Structure formats: structure tokens, C-alpha cells
Length: 166
Image (cartoon, rainbow, N blue to C red):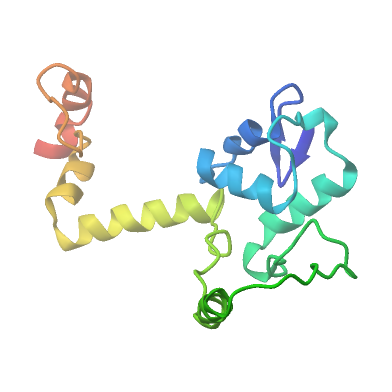
């Protein structure tokens, strides 16, 4: 078993699926993490090298300070693409595309575990403070997203009766 930032990753799972055990990391984010750290989709946690585990731990500890993603991550440092004749229109399009600011890296603002839980609590507290419908539902312990309250929320209604009317 591998411990990364206090989270136990199961040995027999694929690394991509094991990363979803972190609070705040879903399938898409796990796929992006694997691509960024060059971990194959079908690689199990027990087959990860010590270097990959260290890179994963350091990236998840502070994603905002991680080095930027390389343009050609699998190429050697001295690699230069072969020169071929390319139409000028294509060169113009590539120059325009490269001059525009790229999309921000979605992994730079990744928040996991305690930070993600804190953000959720702050959002709920904000909803309650402003007195919105969602905040009132949270305060009463009732379903928030329009679920049926007649059948599936009876237990919540019983348990929260004292808080609502007392």
C-alpha cells in the first residue's frame, strides 16, 4: 500500500482510479494528473516507481508551484523537429495560435482534501448567511437539489424536527 499525503492508495487498482480516493479528485482530474506525470492509464499503483510517487506527492502538495507543462514532454532536450516545406498559410496560423494566450492549466488551481472540504463548508455557510433557499434547506437538513422529500427525507425530517421548531 502506498501513502500519499496521508491517503492510502490501494495496490491492486489502476493508478488513474486510485487517485480518485483523494477528496476533490474525480475521473477527469485523475486522467489529467496521470497524463501530466506520465503515468500510463493501465499502470497499477504497486507498479509505480519511487520517482513517480515522489512526483505525484510533490505535485499534489502544491500544484500552483509545480513547473509548467513542457510543450513536448516525451522528446529529448536536444530534439529538433525535421524541417519540411510548409505552406506560408499554415505557418501564419501556427504563429497566430502560439501568440494567443493559452488556456490556463486546470491542474494549477487543484484543491484536494482539507482545502476542498473547507471550501465546501465556506460555500454552505455563505448560502446560510445570505438566507438563500439552498442555505435554508442545508440548515434544516433537508434535500437541497430538488429531491423528493415525501419518501426519502423522512428520517432527516424526524431527526431535525427539534432544530427547526424548537
